[in-house]
Image (tube, rainbow, N blue to C red; front, side):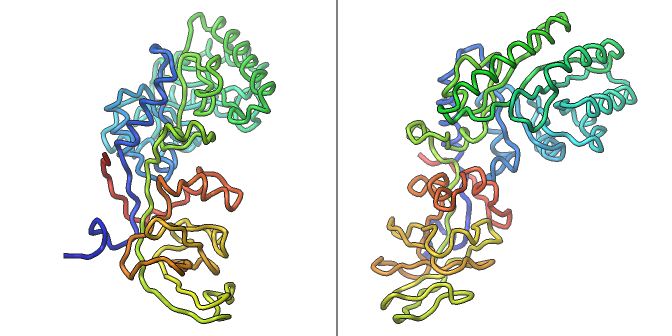
Length: 374
């Protein structure tokens, strides 16, 4: 029998579906009962496992999913997901596959609109569900407010598509110092969507809120809200984070322990020099696994026996070294890199990054382990 904790003995990413369900229930508790929920599962479910996350959210009653690209939606369909899937940034070359797999595109520019209608007509579609995106200030993707008349004119010339929803995206809903800007975005979206709906002669679903807006701007909940990072246990607010549970825990083990003397160097370029007699541990995880070199040289830490062990020297491609001086541990012991006691949000802060970047960078050579913790 292995002496390694949980019999892992390697670097693993635990994905706790009970934590996911807890977060979903907490976020929906902030909504009116009639408000629909769209779960964002792009980027492999924010670095976890999109298919397992989607299956769990389907069981919880989620109304919609969103992915960034068509291949992400195809993977969900291949896994048996039947819930409607919005593709936020579809590429024209993939429109055929999108229709074949019953995915629903965001149409955000005249070029994309025309190309999709052409593909839908070629495939003899009628009332194929599409989602019209307006730019209200993020200046990333989206039609402008004055494009409304053009959209309505185009819709009059085809029966191939039907507007299922109208949506926009908030730029700074987590930053309450930008409340005026956000309220202007909400007002702009309300005005534009009302104008489009009047021209359509029916009311499509409206959605603008991300996780932070679910929490900070109930006036922007409209018919549906979108939640991504909140599902995975983070909210951009330390106070709210106490109500959420991180879904993933990144664990590894100690491969080897060294005792080094004063001024001995550690790692490439001799970036770390021991300040005295020190004990260091080598871990089997590196920047190829998503732990950036930025976390080296004391900018990040891991937990060994519940105690902080700073990352020293330069993070290597497949390994990193930590200072375990004063920590009672041995080779083979478990090490927590990201988890409830060392959240991704806090770790990312050390390198002026965000939880999103750290989580989605986690390599798929790391073994995923699905679990349900109590």
